[in-house]
Image (cartoon, rainbow, N blue to C red; front, side, top):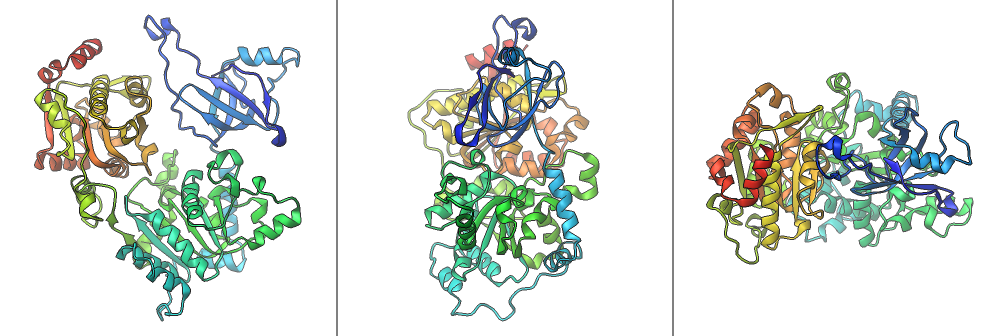
Length: 584
């Protein structure tokens, strides 16, 4: 990264704002006649804490947070002016701009300290922590109101008045109301878990309860809070102003009209709903705050030590998640093998399945798409919420003539397609520990362009691939408004049409089997993002070396959805023919 702009103080908060732009690839280094601009894809997002270092060897020059990020730049907010060690103040600005900068996510500065503290607190002798320890460590069975819910309970009356709830959602809300210790809500893809949580909050408020809403990510909390705001629910959002969604910032105390410490104390005592990330629960505003219920979203993705912090602030808790999708992200193989990758949601689900209430009626995928994850992952527990959802199709405007096989790929009546590239061929390419597949990228980009020509909006097309290198390759070829992300970044998103580039095509079973594609959680995410059409591009031969993917390929083929592309098919499309010549 290269700093292109001067320092700008942000005024009241006394922050210093720096804009970094991507260092352009030199022509001679890239092997091209013209520089090629690559997009940023470093698992960074707005609000992330980062460490600034220089490529010349100055490590951890400053710590800050991302204020804005795009394909070409990152804007970083610092609490102090950026200075190079040993740099003269007179030459400071010029020195900064001459340096090539490296920006890394600060993964460990606070999270590990928080996890250690949570574990220490769990084994303290405080009554609340003793109770939590028995539930989490000793795995004591959770208690539920055995007498049932009383008809005069205002929360029950509220739930019964909601005609829009399906049976699973009603049962889940009843489970939450009956819980004395905890309840587990298994929110399968597209089943309306956020909608259910909104009404869980409102029903608990009917009882006069105080509620802590938490998750690992700011986006998950803000998504729920925005829905609650639309329902007229009052809340306080605790977190860095720049990390909070603009639609929720008005509910941060820093932007309200609170003028004194006493006023802040009064406001915190009066408010019944507070939203904060799992790592933000030790904020001073929560030092003396206790809640009746903690609701944790995305609980299946949160490590056990991280999840403990919010739970210690509440009498009972509700974990909402899906342990059939992505587990906690653990970089260390040793830690993962020792159990760090097992979330509290999974641990409690395995120990006490009676505490689970499952949301099975989904409102996202058409029936053909749903059938894949339903049979391969969920044991046929999913169902479509309506005939309209089950029969949903892409709608095209205008007619375009294409080769027969590609016409079938684009056929809106065919919900699931697997374009097999074994006979093209489309071999993977490896370079410096990265892997991509240029031919697959060209095929995916061509399909995307054809969808756009037929009237499908850019924001209704999503492209998923396991590898960052393939993300970068595809982004260079498609409309910038079409989202292209790795599997990990696509959890929680959905699109009318999803195109998947599997990349791996080598015939080396060991290489493919040990790859990201060997993780069934990730494959489940891939299969559950599309609403109306799912187009998968890959090598059936290579993918079939992985047991789950072999079943996937076989299932699609049984339904008539596998199309075996040949070199002749590719040659029939001028754009693909020319691109293949470039690959060769």
